[in-house]
Length: 108
Length: 113
Image (cartoon, rainbow over all chains, first blue to last red):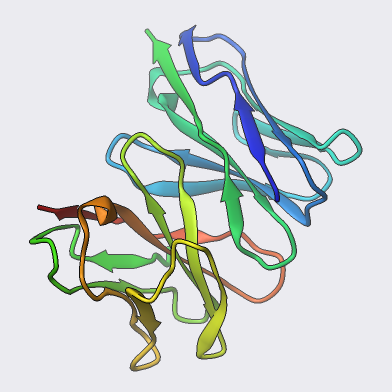
C-alpha cells in the first residue's frame, strides 16, 4: 500500500523567505503531483513530475526516484502563497494517493 | 482556460436521503474521478471512471455509492442513503490521455444532518 508523508505539517514564514516542503512515498510510482488547496477548498494542480526538476515562476519541484522523495520550493515567498500544499503519488492506475498536506502561512 | 465545474457548491441533506453530486469535466478528457475530503483530513480516492465504466474503486466506495456519465458531458456521484459520516467535501477531477495533470473542480461540500 502506498503511503505518502509530508513535512512539515505547518509552516510559518516571513515574506521573502525561501520555503521547502518535503514529501516521501513508500512504493515505486509513475508520477508525483504537487497541488495547492486554498481556504475555500478548491484544489489546483501545480506540478506533475516523474524525474528531475520542474520550475514555474517562483515554484520549483524536484524528485529523487531512488530515494522516493520530492521537494517543493518557493522562492521569495509572498502572503498570497499562503495555502495548503499537498503532495500526491500516482502509481500506474492514474488515481492519486494524497499526503496530509502542509499548511503554509506567509507573514508580511 | 478549461475548467471542471461542480454543482451544487454546498448541499445539506437529512440522514437517509439520496443525494446526487454533479460534475462537468473538461470536454476532451477521458479519465474521471471522485475524491472526498472529510474536514481536517486528507483527500481520499473514491472511484475512477474510464470508457464508460468504473476502472477502480476504493474501500470507501461501497454499495451506497454509484457513478454515471449519463449524457457524455455530466459525471455524477450518487449516494443512495446518506449517513452522518458522509459529510465531507467531494471533488470531481478529470484528465486527458497519457501522463497529464489532473484538473479538479471547486468541490461540493456535503453536510448530512
